[in-house]
Length: 282
Image 1 (cartoon, rainbow, N blue to C red):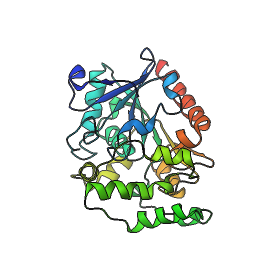
Image 2 (tube, rainbow, N blue to C red; image 1 turned 30 degrees about the horizontal axis):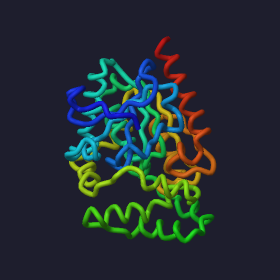
Image 3 (spheres, one colour; image 1 turned 180 degrees about the vertical axis):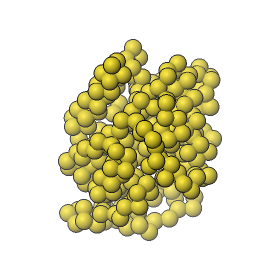
Image 4 (cartoon, rainbow, N blue to C red; image 1 turned 60 degrees about the vertical axis):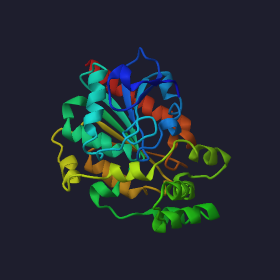
């Protein structure tokens, strides 16, 4: 990633990194994890080549420090970044846990969000849909994947060291294939038990209802992987339907489409952002 825009430069209580063409329209990027170091995003399959990606490092991520106030409250930080950039509204690309923050921002500050691209979102929390992971996993016989699924279902951690080890044991479930490329990628971006725990604190009990009840939801694209054992497939379809969103599944892909199927991911996002730019120009 390119050097950080320091917190002091923007007078913000969190770190920001900028990727790509600074002369292009800014797109805010919200990483997952939750609060994982955004290095794992890379340049989003070259998306930074045509767009100015402004990556918000959530409170609790390594370069920001501190702890999240909960993803619902942290929507204030997204708006603070939009203000610091001098923009009225923005397109947001969010991955995994970051999609919760994106939706909180859209629900609380609808006038500040021009569009959402929600990549491999955790889905069942919004709709209550049943998981279909078991039906996807029948074709995955690799021992690492079997162990990863067991760790997802039964794993527990009470220390930072245990949490990192658990994260890495679960990692093979996040990819459609588990090769050297995926093993290297899984190591990128530090995670923290304290940060992840704080991410889920003080969330309003009616947050899903408030999100589903958005009067004029922003144009939204939901991107799923058809082999994503972390989210399933049907729950992601139901999630997209609840948001009145366009949904696209990338074939032979898990939770990290810019790594696993970069060309397909890049085409989807380029097309989406180009459409949003044309719509903004009228």
